[in-house]
Length: 551
Image 1 (cartoon, rainbow, N blue to C red):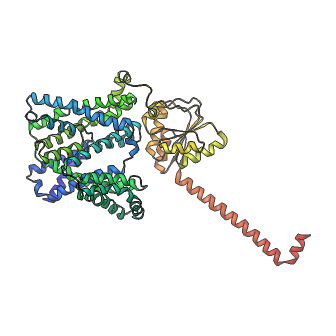
Image 2 (cartoon, rainbow, N blue to C red):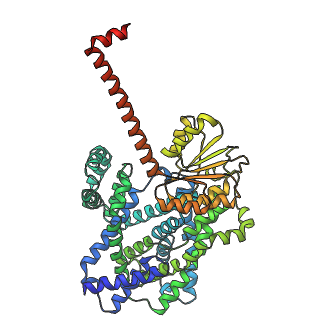
Image 3 (spheres, one colour):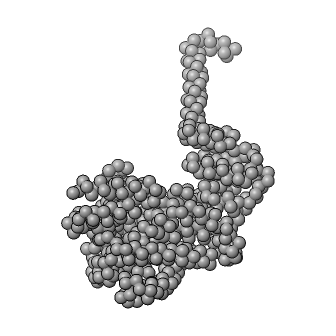
């Protein structure tokens, strides 16, 4: 039956993807289909092992991408904490009301069980939210960074719950894990030497599953917590992003097994589906709570609303919490299926909401602006750019080189835009006029002051999509000056020219031409040097030439 499991899972995932929803909904459906066909998850121990590995690698991957500094921002750590508490406070009475209305799944639950359900429903989906941000190109936007920070904080809350739920008292040897940072130089040295191929993947699996999960479990701690902590330990290495990418498909494949095991718990009844649909009514409340909380931290109403809609769904981590709760007997088994169906419904609601959030904001803009607190968040204030003649979007090596060339003739009339704050600080230290901003983010253009004497915009961003987006935004601002761009591929150059860019320079062609010019120059220099040496040799060899030259 194993081939049938793979085929059914693939078909369900493809069908769901065709209608624009995350494939994980298809995997849940596949689990239900397999249950109908008589497949018992107890007969598939390998599937459950893979599901456990998927959760472990998910937490390890989160740790690899975690910038600890981002979690110390008030809008992230305090915002996520306050939202968690308020969600439980608001959701528990609503769940109690549903029970009083006659929903049998809720009538017999006590306050602790209702709180546990509210806790599971308070999480937002990391998988769904990041996918939406990537599709919009807003991962580096302020609202995107705030949303991702809140998601990571929620993941940490979930890991703490999983650790506490283990129920065992850790061994005294658990204190030895505090010495792990001392091993960081040795681990980093091994990280440097594993290269970029299969050894890198093997290194990641050993770190996540052995040094992380197995080591922590051996001293009485939750293995998932170990995977997260080891991921955080490796996050500062220059190859951490590469490692996360190399393990991505392992993690995704194993998580397929997790969603299958959820579906294999049983089919939802009609009353389960009705209750799941009612639970989705909590999603708008989640969004409203996020909007109110984020504006309290002085973010603009637009930033708060975009981030809140991105977080307006239920989470796969809520499923993990429910899975542990049902396994421990804290919740009736049907609640795992109910939350799984509610998760799917929340994605069905969240997809169109995120697509139309701009229109929704425009409709309620005047009311939402009243929620804003002054002064605004430092990163969410209007961007003052002065009155430059030249604007460079992207201050990497190419943008920096262009800036320095222009500075020789137009010093004081150039402005660079760079989204990485550490690079902005470096440029300022070198005397360049650079401000922080992401030209691939709609927020940047919303906050940008006008520069009436702007003559030239140079697009030096590394990604073609970002450059194209910048061109569209410049058109919306009715910019009348010239636009130049750096590209890597010829088809990108054609697309930019069609969009109205005046001059496009192919990076590789320009590099090739420069390389040839350099080689020819070196050859000419060598030829002149050889000719001079030959003349000197001839003079030394012929006394008459020496005499003539002396005379």
